[in-house]
Length: 102
Image (cartoon, rainbow, N blue to C red):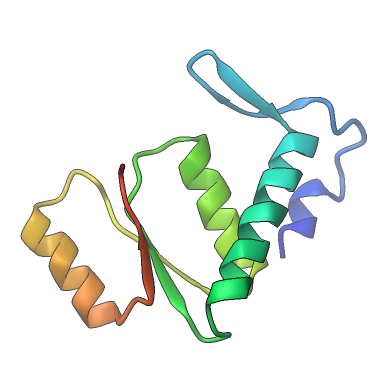
């Protein structure tokens, strides 16, 4: 899945994502995604749903793409919604893991 992101990139040293003063190259991004996807696969089954409760960031992007790379279901949760809504989303989506804001 994430191979589509990298297949047309000729120079993997170029900046793929920038957040404030931090930037990540395509190569670094690919490595981060692969590492996180491997960890996810190791601990969860093939039908797992993972809620991502992170602010917009490089970490959020890596988490989302790693979930896709692992072939699992991504459940996004906006960090700006009320806690009751977060709990409701987690409950009704039957998530197996939640990546928290901290």
